[in-house]
Image (cartoon, rainbow, N blue to C red; front, side, top):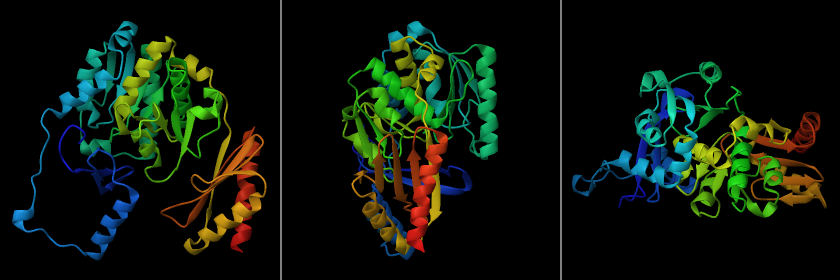
Amino acid sequence: MRNSRSQGGITVRLAPGDPDTVEIRFFDSDGRDIDPGAQRKVERLLYREDYRRAFGGEVGDIVFPPRSLEFYTAALERIVDIEQVRRQAFKIVLDYSFGAASIVMPSLLTRLGAEVLAVNPFASTSSATSTAEVRHAQVARLAELVRVSGSDLGFVIDPEGELAVVVDDTGHILEPEQLLLAMVSLIHEALPDGSVAVPVNATSAVEAILGSDDLVVRTRLWGAGLTETAAARSVVFAGTPDGGCVWPEFLPAYDAAVTLVKLLDLLAAVDRPLSRVVAGLPTTHVAHETIVTPWERKGTVMREIVERAGARETELIDGVKVIENDRWALVLPDPDEALTHVWAEAGSDVDARRTAQEYVERIRQVLR
């Protein structure tokens, strides 16, 4: 989209986690997902069938962009120091999960001088559909391959090519939050003045690693808040506690292929194995709870939480975040379901769960 004169783009894919559902995604002229407001307009028109079918002469041209893989690969090469990565001669185990990344990555990894043990290295729609249990076993097998092969890294790309699971050189499977903090730590070491964007429910360890609140931009959790901040190019990296990574220098969108290339680039820059980076990360204690909340009562719940916060520091970026000493709690209504989410962080797992449950009980009192 960004390299053409098109006014929009469409992709059709199986919905993640639901192989019986097809998902149609629309993109604007900058290659970003259309904003939530535009999505709702499209959905309303579709459900009401309140749209006019175009006459034959009004239908525009559908264009399949030429040399798209070459453009993509060349753009990726421009955002890394290829010679620096080549000198490291990385050995990686890469699971393509039968996704489209298997079409793009081989030629790129060849240019980076990486020795690659490829798993599931071809695109197959039927094979790409799997349950959570199958995915867990898939990652466990890859971790074992990393250990027995003595590789520097293991990487499982999801079939959509957006998210990934990372395994370090010891065979340790990184939790999504660990991946976020590892990326922040590497960026801080390689680019000390680089700023990052994270959603409001991300751990405060992000600020602790960077050593400054000024280098962290907090964004909305729901919608396109993170990618919009990345699109403004005010940060060098944007990530979520769920493992999503956005590299604005390349494209303000989730892309696992870019994450792998940038991870290799950062590891080469700091000249340390990923296991040592992970070992130096701070311990975090974040709890998550949900409570059923009728749609018509969500506004009342949020007002009560604000009023009960009193003199304590609050943030209203998305929902209500109440900060007190070394702990915080975030109360945020779900945009799609009759639920309210509560996240809490404290000095221990027990304190974090207790704090989250305190706010769940406050919401329950409001709903009585």
